[in-house]
Image: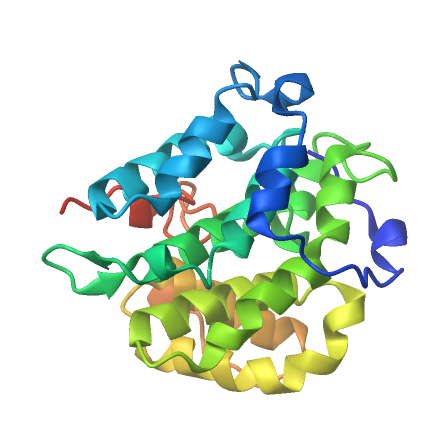
Length: 248
């Protein structure tokens, strides 16, 4: 996990590769994951395209452990995030979760938001107090942060989605990714989405992300008392993966 503002100054203009290319051309077995290498990741990623939403959500939860354990960025985190971003337009992303009537796309976006938060300015600044070299150029977190414009372009189309949960999840991910300097031109537009999350979301960690974004971008914001941060709140959904834990 490392924080690099110097690398972040250069815009990353590459397009997101198709998810099939990410899956086929990544040398998963050579990449570090939380519990060894990433050789098992292709099978987990493939399950995200299953028609059964229980299988999809279980796969995302597994990914949270394999490439996001203890809020850490691993070598395999970046290609997994690119794959997840790449399937946002896949028909499988429209599968509805039983009893909730929410498209899996919202859960995919929440996963991306949680993962992006593990390389966010807020998280990195906190960790950097204890690990001074966390953000030096060339580190895993610095490299992941350079992907933010690419990931943002995959997320942005869903800011206007017809489903409220998808719009909120897309807004949350976009607010975190827009910390990248190359995305500064989008912040005035995103402020509208941040206001909406702040005013309507029932999720305090999400409202906190919106509040912090508005404050950082120079907007007037209300007293944060209703969503005061606690030691166990580490970003979107409290533990960073909360949307994946809700029962069907």
